Image (cartoon, rainbow, N blue to C red; front, side, top):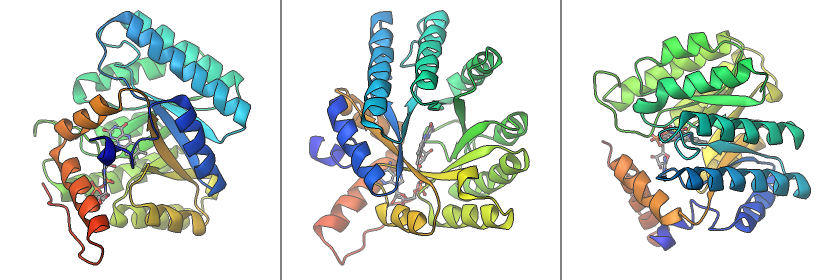
Length: 291
Ligand code: FDA
């Protein structure tokens, strides 16, 4: 597991994240850093994660790195104590603002947290934390409506990694893709700054077409990708003058994180297996099994 994870996770320590982000910046890429540890049981763990984010922000500021942070509200205590989660989020957002006006992106987790996540996002925005962004998942049927309600916001749009029931989510890849394209349109219509988060070549091209048709400059949107995934696509986007932000997870809970990603969505195991085989057996392109 450690060998498989090494490509997708910076390492266990903040120093690993600093080193990886510095390398990305040198290659013209921005970063968003995720402190691993969403499976928590005690308020003290939520405080520890929040502290790690404050340390990460201080380190990025000290090193002059182009990086912001991505937080998971369950990791900050959402399911233990909403008030604790809110106060953790407030302190991270406050510090991120002080240390270079950095954005705090609230990752979107499974559908049991969607309403609570959007609510907390809105509450903090209303309190004046303007450096907050959220995530919408194209897999969810509600997403177009959520996109309309988020006019003017900073929104990462992704497919959604969690396996959700068919009543609330599209069951097949084609519908998710179509909903992604539609949601991107709605978000751009609403004047949002969109993080187009995908490694799907078709969607990346669609994104490029939409931003070009609208005459957006490179500072009005960005592409986002996960560390270690389809780097050749990322390099091409950067070479073509787009902003690209790489999602960089780090932390001691790398093992739990890797295992959870595999459990949440078996498709990820297929990607990793195909990618590993392609590197071991170059020339024999192995395609991941579609779900
Ligand atoms: P698709 O699944 O079709 O992948 C295209 C190709 O990319 C695959 O064939 C494979 O080669 C490669 N690939 C994709 N994912 C891979 C992986 N994990 N490991 C190895 N190879 C992989 N989801 C969520 O629910 N909430 C969130 O907050 C976020 N945040 C987020 C941030 C960023 C920057 C990205 C890029 C993605 C997320 N996601 C997420 C995950 C997202 O919802 C989605 O599961 C993945 O991006 C895969 O979807 P694609 O659009 O890349 O297409």
